[in-house]
Structure formats: structure tokens, C-alpha cells
Length: 232
Image (cartoon, rainbow, N blue to C red):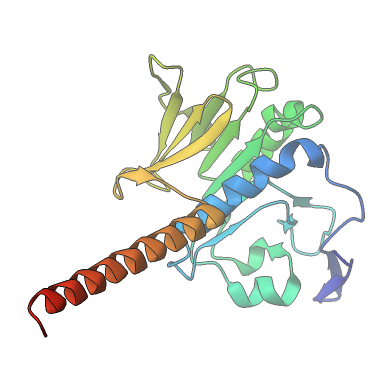
């Protein structure tokens, strides 16, 4: 991405620091799948912003006060502000992200467990989740979700299934986040199915269209054969 800056009240808020993302090679596949899955799920809610690895500035006038969560969700987001700045300026949003998820990696794990957790609590992030592909090398556990109560994080109940799946429910999203054999899957209790990312949803749509076309062709074939038998 070409670096540029935005100008708000005579202060520049860069959209990039010109540095490569830490552990980008390790995280990229997981990051893209998680953000794409949640963005696809919320695509019919225009005011819901699902994003990740973009700067969020949280102190007006101070470009050093910024963070870049792996995945975050803001409800009723100010789209015009985001499109204008190509960053997220929290003082132009209705509030902080309601949901943040970090992906465990070699160089970020300790920061996620301590510094970011403290910062997110101070900023009022309602839910903070951590996902560890390895099952525990980085966070000592595969998945943990926490919710903010009186300025402090408290853990959600974590359920462990006999087959090894670990999951917890996010009240903010009304979704179940599930660690299963290293992957993070997301279950929609209302929809009653696993959420798909953009590529999976597109592939499913194509398959459904192909099946419908095949069924219509078969009906036409049967109707033609029926007319032939009737001598029409």
C-alpha cells in the first residue's frame, strides 16, 4: 500500500508506519480468513465496520497513540470518516470497538497478554479475544474471550468438547468462537450453521446456481420426453 497521511485539525495521522507487520507471514492466512468471515456475516449491516491491521488512533492530537488489532468490530461506525482518512479516528466514532481479536504469534504474544490487554481495558473495549493456532504455545491456551466489567476483564466460560474443540460464546456478536484442530471456526446460533468467508460463500453460491441450472435442464428434458410420448 502506498503510504500517505491524513490531515485532521493540523495533525497528521499516517495510515502506515512504513514497517512490515510483525509475523505477517505467519498470521496472514488466519487474519484474512477471520476478517473475511466476520465481514461477510455483517455485510448486510451497513453501519458495522469489520477490519484489521489498520491503525486506530485513540487520542486526538497525538499520532503516537495508536493501535492495530488483528480484527476489530465497530457498530454504527462513521464510514465517511474512515473513507476520508483511511484510518480509524476514535473521536470520530460513536465509541471504541465493541470487539477485538488478536492472533497469537512469536513476536506479539506477550504484548497481547499484557500491554494490549491493559490498553483495551482503559479504552473500554467491551470484548477482547485471543486465538492461538498452536493450542497454547503463545497464550498458554487455544482460545480465550473476556468481557469488560467495571474497567476489568473477566473471562467467558470456555467449553471443551470430547473431540478436542474449545469454544466460548460472544454476547456482543451473538456468535460462538470455536478452536478446532488449530483453526478458528465461527458458529451462528441463530442461523444454525458455520459462518463462511467471502470465498466460501461465493463458491457455495456458484454451486447452488449450478445445481439449480442442472435441475431446470432436467425438468425441461422430462417435459420434452413427456410431450414426445404424448405425440405432441
